[in-house]
Length: 250
Image (cartoon, rainbow, N blue to C red; front, side, top):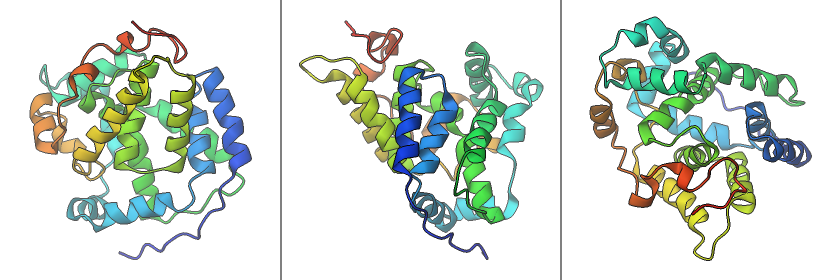
């Protein structure tokens, strides 16, 4: 592989704090997540890329470069997949939330356009970055974490275990700070359990998702080694959060 390491990036804390304030005020502003990740990237991206590239399956993906975005954007092909398949579950998830795979791309591009130090990535790193972005909603399906704010936070905690990032860590700390409060710290424990679940799961960035979409979802979870959620996470996340991270739960 001829990919060269990118120069270390200076972390832009003022930009991250500004984006975090916007995100806390309006959690639907997905582009602010990418703003925070970009502002605090440092060397975390290169570290994640190195782990990906060193894995045999990651090296294969870099050689072949299949387009995950193309596979996830072809809704007619996904609709033809069997009921109960990974791909159909993904399609159901996206349609239920009126989401598109292109939506994350647009949010990512918005953040990149406002970046004062956007790096010029070589093709391998660009591929890894794009693929990591595009698998976000697939991980929702694999983990069972919903699309509400509690599910998004849990999916980020899971992601932090898989792809450590100071930006994600900051968002999670904010989620704990503004989230529901109770003497048992159940909200913080919910996110900690999601992080631990991500730590127990083998590396998911290297999974050949295009080949797994036609398979039954339960089989895909077994193949990828995604452990079942702890019992208190397996309930509807609305028990933790009905509409906003500041809402108390019963």
